[in-house]
Each structure stands twice: as C-alpha cells, then as structure tokens.
Length: 448
Image (cartoon, rainbow, N blue to C red; front, side, top):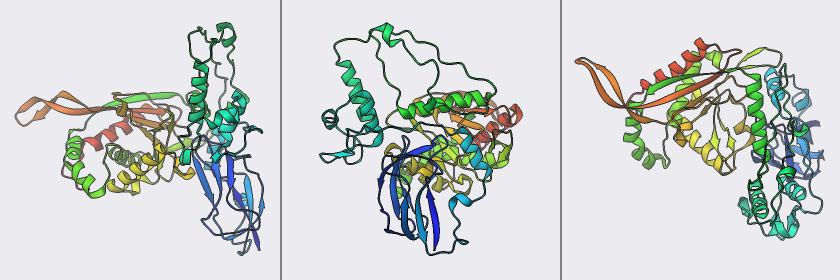
C-alpha cells in the first residue's frame, strides 16, 4: 500500500491560499479518481478539489474553515499502487516555473472566523469570509439572516454583506468626524504585503483629507489583492507602451455577414475577442521572446505553451483573468467556444482553479467600455499585455489603381505594454505591428 498526499491546488498567479469550506469525504471512506474530496473558497473562485487517485482517505490534515497555503498537503490517501509508481506530490523535483509563481504570491494572513456565527443557521450557509466580515463589523446572526443572498441557493456573498454594511452606515444618524476618519494606514498591513524582487521600497500612500459628507467604503479582499498585484507589477517592471492603429474593415464586415448564421448553428454569439486571440497566438509563434517570464534571480524562462488570458469584468466590478490554454492549437471555432464558456462561467463565479492560472500573455478588451485605447498593467509574472480599443468608423486614404481615394473604414487601436527589462522597443513594437498585420489580412470569405 502506498500513501498519496493530496495538496491544496494553485488557484491563480496571485492566490496563495484557500479556505476549506466543507469536507465531502471523511476518514476511512473510499475515494475514486476524479471524485471530489472537499470544497474550497478564495475571493476569486469557489471550487471542488478532486482526488487524482483511487484509494481510501486515511487522514484529513485540516478542519473546515481552516486557511491552507497553496501546495500544502491537506489529506493522505492510501492507494493500492506501489510507492514507486505513485510518488508523493511533495517528492517531485522543483520546477523553475513554480519558483516564478511563488515569488509573487501574496502572503495573506489567515482569516479568523466569528465563533458566534455558525456555518449554517435556519437553512442558510455562511462562508468563512462572510462570517469573518460579520465578526469584524459587529453584524449579529439576526442581522445576517435579514440579508437577501445573491449566491448559489441563496448564499450570502461578500458583496451582499458589504452592501448591507454600506446601507447600514448610510442610515447612521451621526457622520464620522473628519479628524477621526483621517487615521489612514500609512503602510500596507502584513496581510497584504507582496514580496517582490525590488531594490527599493515603494512610497506609502499619502494621507487623505475626508469631509463629513464623504462616504467611506472598505476595500473588499479581492480588490486589495488586485491593488497589491498592480502596484507590485509597476514596481517590478518598467512599463513601456506602443500603439498601432489597425484597419479591421474586412474583419468587421465578415463578422456582420456570418454572426446570424453562426448563432443559429452554434446557439452562441461570435465576438471580436476570439479573433484577437487567434492573431495574438500567431504573433507569439513569430516572436516567442514575448512569451517569457523573469525569475527573481533574473533568469529568463521561455514558455513552451501559448496560454492567453482574457481579462473579464465580474458583476462586483472586480476583474478576473480566465486562460485559454494552448490557444495556438485551437481553430477559430474552438477559441470562440472556449472564450464564450469561460466568460459565462466567470460572470457566474463558476470557474475552476486551473482555469485562472498558467497564463503566459494577457489580452484586455477596453473597447468593450467604449475606450479607444489604454495603457494596461502587466499581469505578473508575464512580460506583456495588449489592450484592444473600440472599433470606430473613420475616413481614411486608400491607394487604388486609379490613385488615392478617401473611404470610410473601421479602425481601432492596439496598445501593447511590455516589460522593458527584457522586451526592448524593437521587439515590443514589432510584435504589436505583427498582430495588426494579421488582423488587417483577415480573409473576408473565411468559413467557420
């Protein structure tokens, strides 16, 4: 009999831990491969963790509500296979790419859970995060039960309780005195510290003057993670942005011609995002040194796979970046279905941990919000990111056999931000130009 260590899976580049919500199996129970062992939660995604092996659970190493670091063993499974055939997960040789991810993980302090708020009361389930917020803000169980949950099966989410707290503060008769409210933290708390390979300490945030009429809102945990990650990225990578204007008339006309028939056939929409991702994947194959990462000791890791993340806005206003794995191996139909599936499940908080990690390049579509261009921040440990601006009609000069003419064309800007430590202007500028070339050369008679 061999012992297999089930470890806490990695749930994204900026997530270092997860909370155990519920054990689905007990000690002594038989487990089959791919059968779920427990439910876990982070502020980015809730998920079930499956067992990769058949066997019997002999030991659960943590209790429900415990916060566990990524990579820590959480359960011991006894298998029939020999130890040589199934070595423990912790015995595998270290991989350099794992070092990269670990170098940017946030060291988040364990979340304490309110002892007087039960996990379930009157048929309602309260997650560790909701119970922790309730404890910190002095929300009683009676008040919690009045909150209308928007989560699965009516579960109260962090957005629900934060909305409740916001309304409660508004209804308070006395405004917060400006002198008392001005006590802001001059340095980040240990729970939000990012250990980055920097040579100097970034300046702390300045004090903020607050008027009595101002509304004070607490940053939610996910927003704090995003903020820390963005500050770290700007501190680690000297950002340079190159811009290219692209004539996408052929692409726009093609989509207008096929979108109705595509919807009838596939029962889903085709957007511009899959076409952008296809062009990016092609350009990355032409310029593989865009598809790299830098380790804390200044080694360059050239990625074997092309995994393109797409920034997606959540209903809460926060961002998440699901990843299209091996995008260069998918045709346009495959990319379209993957994009639609990931976007839909991102909006409904149904992404799996593996679907938000492993990205090697990121696309953000600022044109969705009517923006013509942007200067996106690199999603570490990647070295580049592209923003696709809004497509607008413009007069343009066209060269014809009969001379130059002015015509109405569909145009957009591509903004390419890159890490100047390892990507120079020649590479960064050539890459975004190549993406533009692929989009401009789009075949208007293409079939999908």
